[in-house]
Amino acid sequence: MEAKANSDHCFVNMCYPQDVMDANDLQRISDPDAQRWVNTWIRAGAELEKVRQHDVRSANTAAAMRSFTGSVLHAVRTRPPAQTSGLVEQQRLFRKFRAA
Image 1 (tube, rainbow, N blue to C red):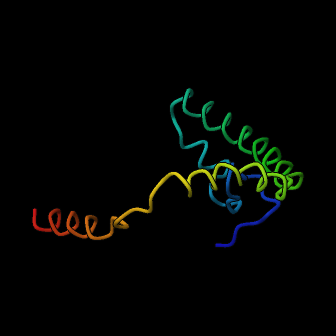
Image 2 (image 1 turned 180 degrees about the vertical axis):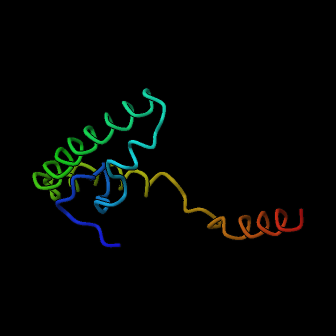
C-alpha cells in the first residue's frame, strides 16, 4: 500500500493512501457523534496538511539553526556529559519485565 502525496487523507505528519477510510467505512460508524468527529478530523487533517506543507516550504533552516546555536553551546558548556546512555538500565528493566 503506497501513500500518495496528493491524497485527500493527509494528516499532520503523514499522508495515507485513499483506501484508509472511505465512505463505506464512515457509514459503518453507527454513533452520529463519532461520525461527526471523524468527518471533522478528515477536513481538519487536510487543512493541517496544507499548513504543514506551507511551513515546510517557507522554513528558513539557516535562521532556525542560528537561533538554536546559543542554546546548544550553553548546554555543552554547562551540562556535563551523561555517565551512561541508559541502555544498561533499559536492558535491566527488559529482563525484569520478561521474568515477570
